[in-house]
Image 1: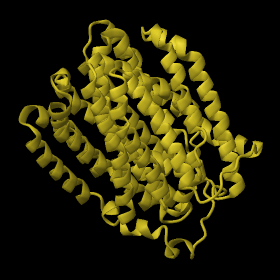
Image 2 (image 1 turned 60 degrees about the horizontal axis):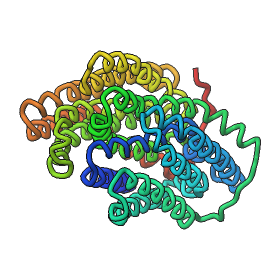
Image 3 (image 1 turned 60 degrees about the vertical axis):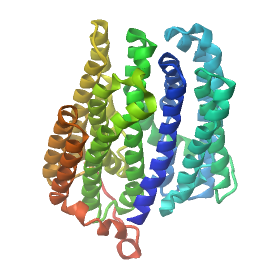
Length: 474
């Protein structure tokens, strides 16, 4: 359990530093300039999510993931992928800037093409070490890069007083992360072109690639439509809301997947898999309530203290944006269990529902819709995606959804009531209701309360005495 807390703490530190960096940039820049700076994240996501093959997950999930030759082949595949991503962003810089109404800034997107190229030379040995539940190298790589990127804001702000601050911070973050990954690696950096491994990587990763394309639409599609319809000032408000609500979401989902995926993968074919998968799902439901309440309680403080009057419109949006992101956390446990079983397409399928809501957002905005209406459409789509994850999890992953029923009811009631309490009565009521909800969820989650057996999954008592049997999924 101490490792899980350390994992959460490390990811939270890195995320907090990046959030602090974005808050500082928003404080230094006019809101319209911050909206322009937010488009750099859109451009980065365009190439990274559209070329993501889940190499980190493959290293953990594959039986060959600990081998030196396999790691060298992964490095070769990553360089080829990163080079194509960089070239794509460089060639698309003109059309992207023209589409966003900023043709004079094409050069900035061409400079940004260096970021995926730098990322391509990371040493993935830090991810191999997570197979043995050693998360320190991965955490230190992310945290140090975020810290240097935050510190770099001060000299960058001295040199430039506009959106170029964000451009410089993003590039510095990538350089630092790449260097740290090599420093923390135990094995020397080797590259090979093993076409057999590459083919297997593509076969495993194409659903994750599809999910990357879908995730781009999910995370960035709304921003693009807001920028086109409402302008960069509205984009600045909306992008900051996404940043505040999404940052803890990524911390929770990444930490829980890093913790549960190696153990669930090893437990495949044993009697330990089902209770561990249920506990994983219950842990994400509990995390969703905590995350939602945390954003609602801390959000107004951040708006008043760090952002100022220009972002006051965010006060009404943020509670509902927290619900939207909490729903994503709710299904992260089911996606992790599916990934451990080799069902890597579930995440893409659930996110596809969210992406299909974008035409509705376009229609609403074209008819003088507001940012709040955009968020409500997103919430409905996330509910539908969570329902699909439950259905597929019960059929393909053999996840006993009935065991999750009471916890799902508690979570649904909590996510429905917390924003109403926040807007009507304030943060104190929100915090109290969240505590009651967490207590109720734990009452109906015996697998989560008995978290100790999950720790045994990594011990000799679970695996030295029983050999996992092959499992044929329906």
